[in-house]
Image (tube, rainbow, N blue to C red; front, side, top):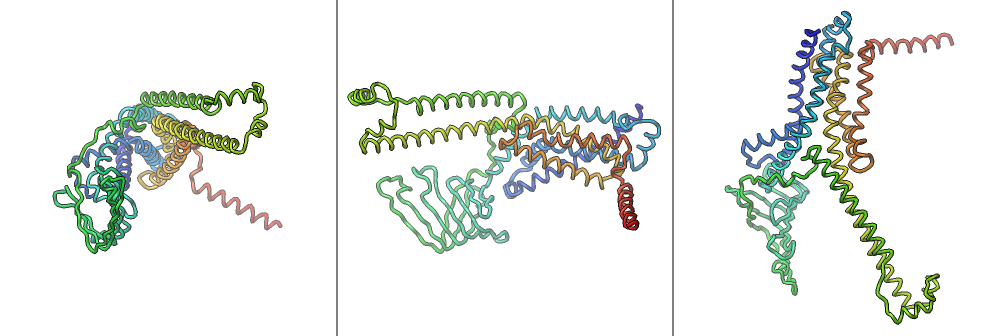
Length: 487
């Protein structure tokens, strides 16, 4: 049995290493495809690219590990079944469980290691990758123009271009807002042009802008900060040239503290502390809201005219039993004033209550996000365990090794898991489900599938055999033919 266990481990480790690197390569290519516009043309050094891809690769390990386990399990047991090695082992009286036993212990180690990786290494990798990607996005923002989208990366300017000719670099239907920080007001100058070109000079410290056929609208009062007069100036031009100063061409590295409190950068203990702090603050806010509503909105007391109070007490005999009749004793002007004051007070109370609800909703959403991240560290690790008990028996049933059928089946199952997982996470993030429900729903759905496949493989069911299905179809067709003949 020791030789058999060693043989199974050798048969599994090879495909696992290969499929793990293949999975990581595919996931990294997906990342590059997503952020290619933010990386190309930034003049980044090779070490910056290497650091970014290294951090990104670490963040993708929790996603690539379950996929590699699934693919390697199907390939390993599919190859054993294709070569009739599983049949020989079962004929020798060795059950499928005894065959899978060394790999089960190995997968348990993978699951534990994946959890410790998600809890200790992943937060650091997320922090470094997010900070570096943030710095890269700010690098040379003049090259990040996109069609139909405002960019605000260039300090003091908001620019939108409707169409860009990729070959010539000519931009069409340009809209430029100028709002430097040293002005007392916001945007004071707007430029509209039919076309133009924006290029950085050789030093990378300035961007040369050349515009054609447009107008420049300037609010001189906003430019000077004069609050008394606001002269307005409009200039039509056939051709206009100006220079926009840029930041230093060297990549400016931000401090890691910029993102350190984000939920993706924390471990289990930090997430729990953050949730406790948010819950205490939310509880205090709700108590304060209730106290404020009672004291300011329902039990409010205002200073009254002493002479009017004596008349009020005399008219009501010291008690207010019927406010409607008291209201009818007022004259028209007093009634109007009372109604206006009540409406104003009610609208003010409603607005304050709406603001309190927004603040509470924001904190509740933050608590859900921290709880989601807490459960994510367990679900992605547990996925390795689930996918093994899906892939191993499925490979024995399919009995096909290599990268053909196993890859197709693995990708289909992984996509199904990922879709369910994303739907559950979104439902939990929006509050439709509890965080633990949303994050564990994919595992709850696929775990029974693994149990069914394991039972099927142990009982040598022909559920994946095309011949069994053909025989079943033939029986049905024969039944209907016989029934028709008897009729």
